[in-house]
Image (tube, rainbow, N blue to C red):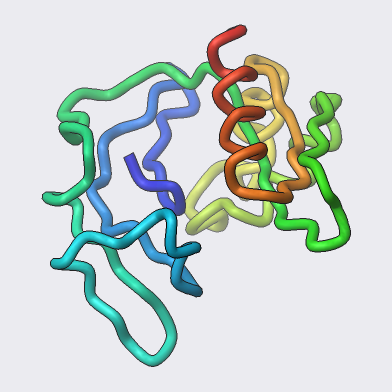
Length: 141
């Protein structure tokens, strides 16, 4: 599944697979080397799907949670907080694609989704500590 685009059925709350290269705006630290087949452009680094360390999904999957991640350069440790459905909807709605194609411009679907699954906000910091925070959150679900 993509970290940027996830075709979602708001009635079933299932996400369909959408294979997409992982895009990094900057190279990772040296201790996390990119695969040799990564593509570097003047703006980004692309990691092709076929070199990712897991097999891509080929069936839809239920949404277990929504996590909004922001890099916080001022933080020395990641900060995770649970969001109320209203704030989650506020953060999710700007990410709706083709909102005009949906009834009520997609707002009813966003409200239903954010009332159906838990939502969190993560101000990320150091990569390793942030990864541990995310792993701990998802293992607790």
